[in-house]
Image 1 (cartoon, rainbow over the protein chains, first blue to last red):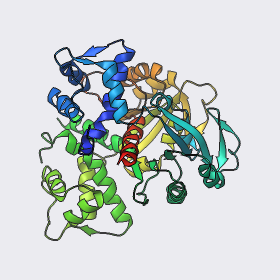
Image 2 (cartoon, one colour):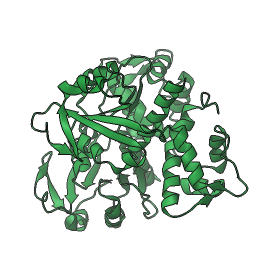
Image 3 (cartoon, rainbow over the protein chains, first blue to last red):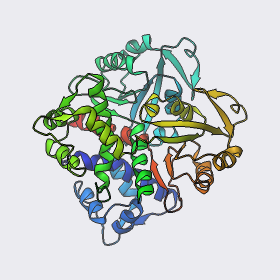
Image 4 (cartoon, chains in turn cyan, blue):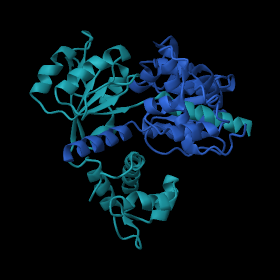
Length: 211
Length: 211
């Protein structure tokens, strides 16, 4: 299977398929047609088929897809099956919310440490994990392979902590702080902009009022 | 200007343009070519032009775009210029983080109230706003027009509070709770799935390792 040519836009749709299939399993739905899946997900069935064809199609269209098999396969493509270890840098409200996020563990992400520079929270526990000083970050990463750093620090600090984490071998960054990160070749950054969907919503309700 | 036929995918890109243009203004960049804008945003310049052509093109391509004008116009399309009032339901870690989010006010969203059902937080203030009981939600909305409800409550409670808010006239919902909401015609929901970009990141770092 050659994933190298899969367009980015297809990749960004895979998590949504993965989630939906999980919801189907929660409802004890074990088999689904591409038509029904596309209807529930509000995308065209040809898009579903085209997306899946990038990965060999996942078979048995006449009988519909085996939901569990399909979710497992998409999980493998996403690299969820081998698990990812993650640290959170920033133990403010957002960092705490992320540390308590049930969906991460469910998708194979293992939170191994939390860092902050606020004396008041050092040594306290969030979801069973002790908050360590950011000063201990480098030493921690020397002794442990970590895949992903989740950045929930103010904009002014984010480049500095990301530099340290990248220098110590972290390849993936989920950035909740505004501003673009400059990181070395071979690292990957996903920026999360919480106000984007709020702006989209503003457009939609404005359009509803104008019509 | 007829916005009705603008494809959804174009709309979902507008917040990103809006943000980028704001960053350019912060750097005192007042004029930019579509080529330069597309390079910085990592999209093709033909996509930038095609997207903008849905709204009349925003003019003066030979000299590049006037950044402030372009941002203002995109802001108007998004309905940011007239402002949106918002409430947050759920004052846990995520609700608190959202209440303190500087980017919302900057984009014309005015947080007018916060609701929770946890006795321990009722009456406390977050970012200057007192947390009220969810029981007071209906009465509050009877007396005040609110555009958007930001839902940061557990999955089990989300449909109930959303029903109340919709019944009282709220048209826009930003849903951070997992699970699909069923709401009446004429309401708009944006679901935020924080683990989606984490899964995309997992794919990218896996691909980096495999190559």
